[in-house]
Structures are given as C-alpha cells and as structure tokens.
Image (cartoon, rainbow, N blue to C red; front, side):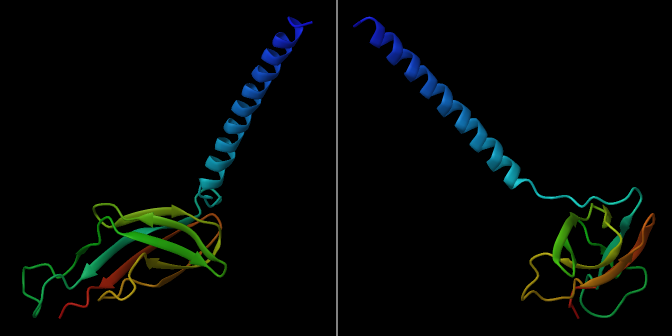
Length: 144
C-alpha cells in the first residue's frame, strides 16, 4: 500500500503542474487579446487620405522665394465620431496619411495639443462608402 500512494501523489502533483501551466497560458492569451486595439473594419477603398501642412514656419512677414509652410511630418492624429475615438494615424515625413474608415462623419485632431500654441484641428470630414475622401488640411503654428 505504501508504494501506491507515492505513485498517486506523483500523478496528482503532475496534474496540478499541468493545470497551472494551462491556466497561465490561458491568462496570458486573454490578457494579450484584451490589449489589442480594435481596428476599424472599413469597406475596401473607403476612408480618407491627404496631406497636412503647417504655417507660418518663420516669424515676421512672408518673403519672396522663402517657403512659408511645410509638411507636418510624423505628427499623431486621432479620429473621432459621435461615440468617441475610432482610429488614429501618424503623418509620414511629407505630411501624408491614409486611413480606412467606415462611412460616416468624423472629426480629426492632433493628439496631446491641450494648452499648446497653434491650431492643429479639429478638421471635419465625411466618408462615403466606396470612396476615399481626399483632403488638404492646413495647421496654424501660432507664430507671428
């Protein structure tokens, strides 16, 4: 009888270890799924694309031959509808962006601009099913 109990104890301990491993993997799987940001499921070819520029880029009056604006490079923006934030994007080095969205009305604003000088939105845009709405938005640095 003494030989039987160590065998049973070994089986029980092995089962407990396996159960702990399974629970740990399940927890990690659920946690990583909860951290995933939902992405908008837009129809093919539905959304907005464009370029965002900023001006003025130097103080004082405009000068002939010297650009007064430039692309707003690597800037983070948030896209919201009546229910809140639905997506975000970052402009590329040339101020361009493209984002797929469901048809509807959206407001686009630069992230984290509270209390900062200048005006970087909000910009309103309507997205139509099956179309990519092209935009050119101009931001004001507030520099004079």
